[in-house]
Length: 344
Image (tube, rainbow, N blue to C red):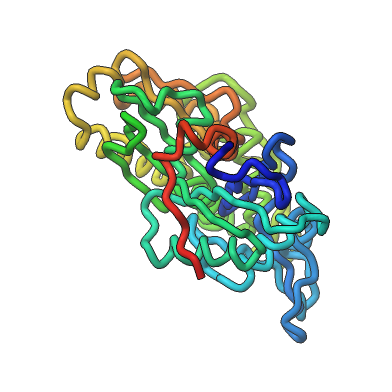
């Protein structure tokens, strides 16, 4: 019987509690939920109006008394009560109200968070109704989800670029040998685009528009692809809507500072890596996971700057939740990679 409990009274869950999206995997059933980590609150009654996809649609479009918030910032809980409410909603959506006992939950966290921040994650999961909480670090979950042999003596390297954090880690013998947790990731790329458009064109755009622009023509290295895109924003001088065309080269220049910081984090992690494992990495390469791995040319940019082969995981957006799910399904084999969450 699994150490996580063979009974499915509450259903064992794997949770990727991300800055941008939360994914929930139910044991034996697969990924049951993938929704934005957004909560809409009514500030007059302090009550939750909407959670997830419905709440995200409200961002920038709500009346004064309704506020759409992201309770996780840079990979950590910025608002404990709202996170607990969001998690409770997602857990209930997956397991329903039929469970006799709360689920056992394995939840992943950034490798660089403090013990206080880690406790907040555990407390949120307990407040959402979990009967037992286990914590796994995000780069370890990403590596397992990408199919890397984390239990072997040979080194594996993963770069997980999410919404709020970039997690870089060298892993061997089910442990993290060298790691860097950087609070620069997809959101920072979006903010860099917003600032560039504001500075260069005196045009105000939202982060959703910036994200769409990043996906449509963004790149980290000169590669073939669409050259221009048209966007609409608010002219800062007149206050009226205005359209402009933006080039891919210009966008790459705008995103360069955060991309440079990600490259520097990879380099710093390699510098701290034991020489024996460095040799393994030259052969095996670096694996990119997370939504940021989908930025065109990022693999080519890293390979060009660092000189080691760089590959994108097969399912980069799902790597973390799939790795966390693998721990749920194979707990006897992989229990070394988790720590128990604090009990209330």
